[in-house]
Structure formats: structure tokens, C-alpha cells
Length: 301
Image 1 (cartoon, one colour):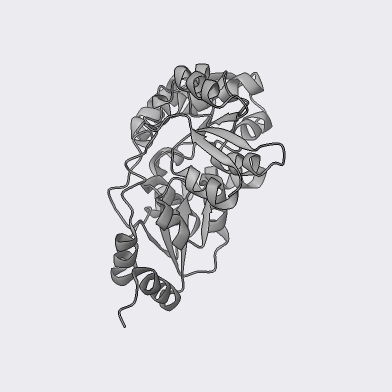
Image 2: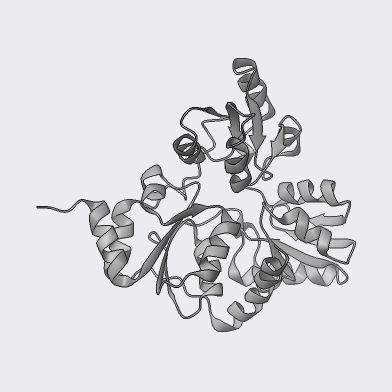
């Protein structure tokens, strides 16, 4: 009998001693086949601790790079090599080096949504889940934060640090507008509102909480939450509904779709395991420098 694609993936995964990691924004069927589903921080931690020989990373390129930084002797596969991150591409290592010359006293904190080459020019990495904690821990009032200006603004407001912000942003989260929240609150008056810190400040101001995707997952599980308006990439609703079947979830905006996150499919996961490609490998010189910034983050969290 013909095996289903899921059965073929699970068989090959066992043969390769592979682990499948999926971001919360991946297609529902990709989340369902994964060994672990999480946000950037959780996936980084899983990648750092895995005993698998092969990591199949269902996310975007910078995430697979981070897994390679932490696991130089493992094979890290990104099922679609074209799955990039526009925000990560809004700053280059050369641009960061130039900015560091302009601000020689600043500590460089880089959002994990960045290339390995940019991480290598940084003092610390952070995620949306731990950015406030990381910046608070730094014994310097002057911070250069790249590449997300909106997450940087969110952190600056909560730490009181003098932060220079690079003008990058997430094209998906900037599609979420204040009027979207106002409309949803009018339609669902009993619902709480959570949004991602990558959203604009005027959007965050209208929410009950600004949380990473893992924070949203925990918030949704609270007993006092029965309806939730969710301001982030829409695919997170798959997991929220799966884990909280008796609760109601509404996307702030159905336009909040990341096309890069949708590039990975079950067919591509199967092909990656069959061919052991496309593999993501960070050059050793860059990896060592980038690893220092990631390790400083992991040591704090």
C-alpha cells in the first residue's frame, strides 16, 4: 500500500536521526508533522540541545543559520532555500560596521531576525520574548539596536535606555493597523487583545499585551481568557485553536501573512530528507563570532 507523505517523512526522519523544528507561523500541516513548534527563542534552545544528527528547520533562513551556528557538526536543512526574511535583509554586516564607527560607545543588540554575518558584528542577540530582559541586563545606557525599529521602540520604552534604532521592520506586522484592532474590539467586545512587539507603537497601545508568539500561546491558555484577538501572522491561530479547542480566536488582520513562511510544504520536507538538501552552513569565521552573541543571550535567558 502507498504510504502517505506523513508516513514517508516519519520513516526518513527515523532513518536520518533527524528532528523537525517548526515556527509558529508555518502551515498547519507542517506544524503537525514537527517534533517541536515554537518561537525563535524556543527553537534556538531546542537546536542548541538536540541529539539529532539532522535538523530540518521549517522556518526562514536566519533561523536555520542560527541552528547551524549552534550545531556546526550537524546537518541543518531548510526545505526551501528561498524562504528568507525581508527584515533580516534590511541591514548588512557592512552597514552595521559603519554604524558602529559612528557610535563607538554603544553596545550592539541584534534581533535574532538577522543574518549570521550581522550577528557576528553584534555584542548580544535577543528575541521578541527576551529583548527587554537582555537590554536591562546590559551595563551600558547606550544601545544600538538592529534591525527592527518597532521592537527596538518597545524595548526602549520598557527599559529607559538610550537606544539608537535601525529603520528596519517586518512587512507582515506593519500591515496590522490601529483601525483593525478597533474594528475587532467592536465585533468582539469580550475578547482580550494580544499583539506582537514587531507591531507599530500605535497598535501596541491598543492591545492588552504585546507578546512574542510563545507568550501568546501561554496567554491564550489562561483561565480568564475565553476569546482572543490576535495581532500577528495568522498561522498561529492553527496552534491556538488546536491547544484551546473551547476558546475563540480572531486574527486582527487577515492580511498579516508571511509569504516566506508559507514556502515550506510537506513535499519539500520529504525532499529535503531524501536528498539532504538544501543545507544551511555558516562559514566558521562568521559562526564563531555570531555564536558569541547568541551564547550571551542564552546565558541570560
